[in-house]
Image (cartoon, rainbow, N blue to C red; front, side):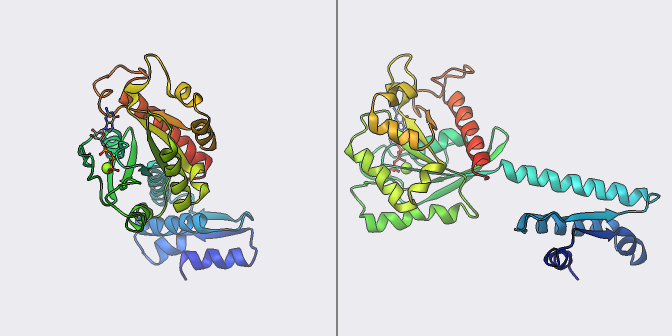
Length: 287
Ligand SMILES: Nc1nc2c(ncn2[C@@H]2O[C@H](COP(=O)(O)OP(=O)(O)OP(=O)(O)O)[C@@H](O)[C@H]2O)c(=O)[nH]1
Ligand SMILES: [Mg+2]
């Protein structure tokens, strides 16, 4: 009987605890103890992750006190499973959304620290399909999905919407955060329409998982922070409030060479702040 069937049976019968003696599996049947440890512990962890009941079920693994080898093998197998779990918690899948030409592809390159996405300098052609790239950034595994921009005059909405929605499959098994990308410029009717369309495509709930990220930060007046810029416009203020105040600013062109730590007008500083915001958001929303 598999580990999962044993645990599921105990659970459905309302048992409070179950014991797995290592003696029978490892010594009597002569299975390699490292294999027994791996199969047993992975089975228990998988069951725990998929279990929906909140009733306590204690799982004990019993090893003879003189069997030091088995104790050691089980201890290191457990540590390895914890390490792998921690690592998977660090990986983040993030989608960039916004109007065509707002700087999504350029921003994605800044966040991942490499030129992986093509920024378009002409007024017409932009990113045509979803593109996903993964890199290690500041001790996290970051997957970014760049999407085609909204309101591209060259493409109909019928053509664009399904392509943008592909970001969901690119992010399987789930999206940790959406970056709604806007420029530091007037928040016009069209920008408001961009937000409405994003909410229409993904539902209003998207704002609970979104961070508003501004590009063209150099357009901010000297010494001005993005929150002050937002405060000046009621509609922008409402949007950021609906995202629980999550907002950051970059300048994909002018803030790259500023390596001063803690300098607001530096992409390096802003990237660290953005990653911290996404970590916090992930914890709040349970991943
Ligand atoms: N000065 C400045 N220019 C930027 C910034 N971000 C992007 N640009 C420029 O804006 C243009 C469009 O940038 P992209 O990154 O291609 O914009 P996009 O949102 O990916 O565009 P689509 O793929 O069409 O949706 C390019 O010429 C970029 O160099 C920025 O922060 N500051
Ligand atoms: Mg693009």
